Length: 367
Image 1 (cartoon, rainbow, N blue to C red):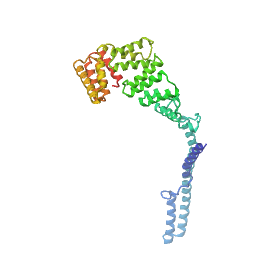
Image 2 (image 1 turned 90 degrees about the vertical axis):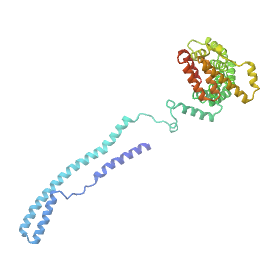
Image 3 (image 1 turned 30 degrees about the vertical axis):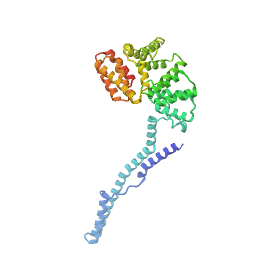
Image 4 (image 1 turned 90 degrees about the horizontal axis):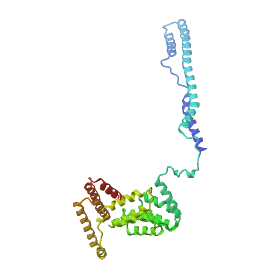
């Protein structure tokens, strides 16, 4: 009601601003009018009579004639001024009193939404779900969970969304809360493992691998857990084991499964070169456990350097290039990782199939 009153008050003020100047009487204008000339002639006759230049009889006759002309001129000027002034004032008043409100109403009906119903004031500050961005929705859910931290269902909904947004640490914590407050399930364990791997730049760490193994104890057919365990085997240099895991996954999956292309690309990445993948011997692993951090770091760098030297001589090993790029990323040397990816693409530029496999692998590594 206050809004309509304010709008009405503004309309009245606008109309008043238009009509107020029209209600004022215009100042008389004496210069340039015929009546002013006759008035000057009457004053001149009076001066001539006083000076004795003309007689009083002649002066009186002249005054009568000039007075008659003065009256006629004054009447004509009044008619000329009055008629347009009245018509103009009436026209402007009609436009101000009727035209302005009508024009405003027509403009509102065209641009406004008169049929839109009002809604409570409390809900006006909340953006509609259809137009709210994903970040806003996540913020709303997080605000809800801050007040209701034991809402396991809310954590289950929030966790995968955070993972898709790349907020892997927050996603991992959300999965843990979902497991704690809403039960332990294979999808939640697999989602937790994926979030841990995402936080490690795609490397399936020991913690992530443990979560995938827990998922398989709950559901031996969990697709995500089996895929990432195959990825863990590939990253450890056990290409044959990775191929075996992914082949078993494909053999039990329907032909129209949406994740089949991902597994097939991974299998193609290791299928042709699995036999060539070097692995660490048991003696080497045992020796590494007893090394100091500096010696172990030197050994790792030596292995990476030897791999880079071998690829410089024979650049046809797709999996070797991927292992080299992954090693540089694990060591935190992103510059060498990018340089190795460029060298690999240059070395395989004439082999379309291997180049395609290489690009799929680089994409999985975030390059």
